Image (cartoon, rainbow, N blue to C red):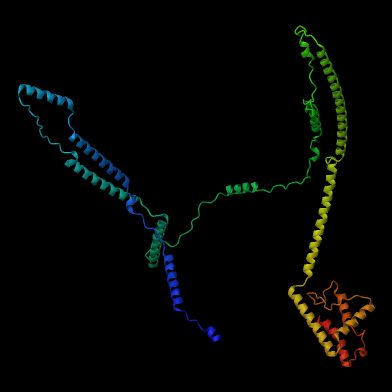
Length: 485
């Protein structure tokens, strides 16, 4: 089965034809892409002023056609005559001949040949041949002029100049190799004129003066101008008084403004008694006047009572406004703002100092931790040494026939008697440099580690049931572990 899978599969004829077709298409596409486009040069005849020549030819042809038509019209032109008058004359002559008995003579037209057209003149043909020859000469001269003024495109011109320069250099190099060139090989470097050091020093001095260091900005306390803001209380009071004077009333029929009416007594006094018409009063008019007068008195009383109530209300509102303004002034932020801003500024400075001190302390602690931390490969070495020591310790206990759980329980009992707490984790962290236990105090950690490994005070030879050799070997295990650590 594996051999059949590894065996190359035979392609069918259709697949081979398809691959061959794709390969041919790919080759054709690559050949097409490999072709470089190169524009054909512009033909020389486009530089000739053919338009002027064509315009001149058209003008000549038009002029000749005009002359030909003019001559043709003149050749077929007949003299002017009055047809009706001539007919009348002929009839009159016929009548006269009839009366006289003589036969009427018919008028015979004599033949007259037309002149030869000017277009068929030999002088015109000679003139056209001369103009054609002159045109050819102008075309040739213009072509020569354009050929002299023509030049290659910038890229081609630069390429041709580069080729010519390279050819000249190559020829000169070959001649120098043959010893024929008379051009000297040594070209001394000739220095120019001595620089003006005084002007250079002055220029440097001006540059340094323009780029001199500027004095640093002197920090000054920020002056808050909130306390200088003008209060809007007076403007508000003025607006309220204007509203009381100018706003219209809110009840009918007094819809006019609240301003006091002007005195109309002067207007009424202008009307004299002489201007008044005498009137007679009736009983109904008297009753009407009395009713109107009574009604007017009632309305006046109501208006007076309303005005009195309005006056009292305004006094009350004014009193309330004064109280509100006093309370608002007591709670206004503008008062005492300078003192509070100074206290706030001192508080912010103290908080900023405390934060800066805390930040410096945290950075120092971080740097101490990083500097005291062992490297990664050192920690790996320590971990491997610790695991190797523990494994050897457990193997030695197993060979001696002592259970590690029994040793841990004995150490826990010993720690309970001493009243000290020890972690159940028996692995100790080591420092990077000395291989000691990683603890803030290496000496105390070492003593604690030795105390954890010491079990001779807790277990006796009779408790373990070991022989003398096994018991002595078990006693030496903690010291060996500590030496390895």
